[in-house]
Length: 390
Ligand SMILES: *Cc1c(COP(=O)(O)O)cnc(C)c1O
Image (cartoon, rainbow, N blue to C red; front, top):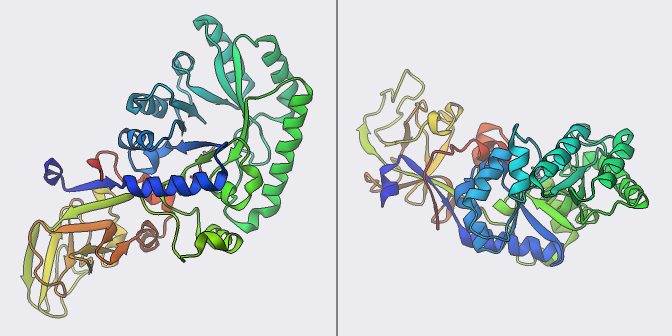
């Protein structure tokens, strides 16, 4: 296989993804649109591979952060009925492209609304917009004081604007500590959307939910959920999982996590070596053999995202067993102690993240070793690694 030529590779499990979306779709109901959030290179999974796989599983709505990600998504898509929605940044000149390609986008500034009208007129095709309302996150969103002008612009340009959605985003729906703030945001959103309706502005949909808010606050599901982390097989945090299991005991009858990780990260053994007791391994003196040891080299290092802070701390899987990192993580290479794993040979599979036999390295355990969030670890997986669907 050509992938063997690369130091390491990413595998995406289609069956895990199918399982996740079937669970999430059952939960939100069949009339609710499932939008697959693929910002951050599809949370490190790779837009180019993830989009076609998701389309094969029936997904037809994707949310991206920026216009360049939207271009990648459009390029990767092979279904005419797939829709791409930009939630954030649009590069100069890309607004026209978005309108031409039927890509919808969030409007959180009056200026963007005016530009959308201008571009739509120039192109002769309406822009598909979502009014992103400020409800309390205080990051992006139209302010209440701007609503009247927005309504005027929308009414005066109804041939040039299609109002696809009214939307907002919650400030930390994964933690009960933010309960009051989220509740206020939900109330404000309801109040604002009634106001828009009273002004004769009716949006095609209302959407507010990300994974955590859909799972913790079902009232936020509305017409569409923008699922990021959960579709990749991760709970936004442990609290959300515990909360969910408590609320819906029937879902967890089997005491098994209904979500399954889509991504695995694999490499292979490049070389093995016997090192006598009392020798240092690798650069410097961070690792001293305490017995006669067998050390295996794996062609992955901090240049591939395997952090230097995993020195003497990280763990990989070889032949279904856990192999601890022994010595400094190098730029392109790490060394692991395989003394207790019988018959390790050159070419044996090494799992960095994922399952092997009975063992599993979760992103969470990988990130606990690194003290990072799932989100942060995932997006740091290099885009350049080869990817395949399994
Ligand atoms: C990232 C993002 C989401 C998805 O969040 P998850 O926690 O990964 O589900 C939804 N909406 C917006 C606006 C986002 O930026």
